[in-house]
Image 1 (tube, rainbow, N blue to C red):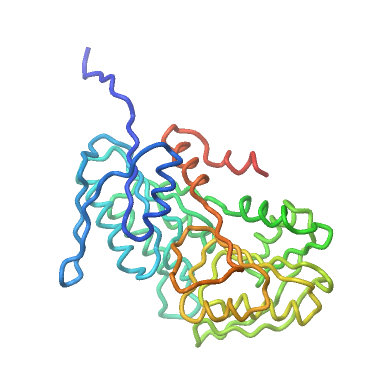
Image 2: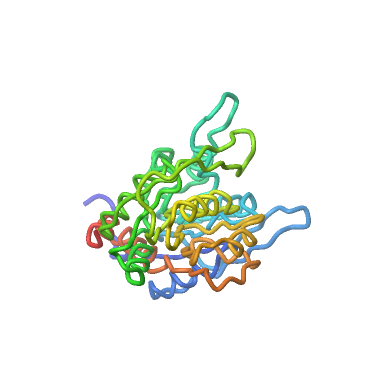
Length: 325
């Protein structure tokens, strides 16, 4: 007989960066494991040091880091942690990115522009990542930027079920804030049995976050409108879309988004908006400058934990959503 046989069992280890430890703790609790103790700090010049306090040799390692502000620091920390796991002889490295940084830069709009979303995927692959697990990418094509498996999770079941349980579905209209989100809005319509409307907008290509809303396509008068988006950054786009709906006779507007980036003037815009409720998930930490009764945050930890278990046990991540359809 050639070779050596072992009787060792597979081992799952969950790691977290410093960007959003609360979500990682919740995922760990759901899985029934502890986060691996990690020593991480910044040197005086800003360089990042990371060392894991337990051996990762031969383990299936899952590394969580959400790309929140300061986004470049946390991306770099994640890359360093991936490299540390690779050099620690991890059996496999799955990178869990609840919010994927630079996802809006997924194509060239004009000459001499980068495709930064592809660069992030390349950096993770070069660092040693075998697999990416993420939530609601800005565009589906980003899955093709990484050469290994990409498990794309969706917040739609959690968000849609929450809204459907509190709103009269006979008066409900699902609204896409732009043409790019129509496909997602259509899935909402299928799940809740509601009609679709679209807010047509034009973005100023020379000014970031500058949007002009033109018209509403679809019947919204006297309806409870649910605006669905993947992320809200400064809040300009979504608040302008909500204003357009109210101007066209909407009875009420609820805004849902997977990622509450909420940077810059977002706090004031949300506070002053006539929108009755903003619903987010916890893929990003609370920015700390919001004190609004009309903000609801739903947890993605159970979904992420189930996906981690399916990956570890060689199951099907897709089945998580097929059974909820």
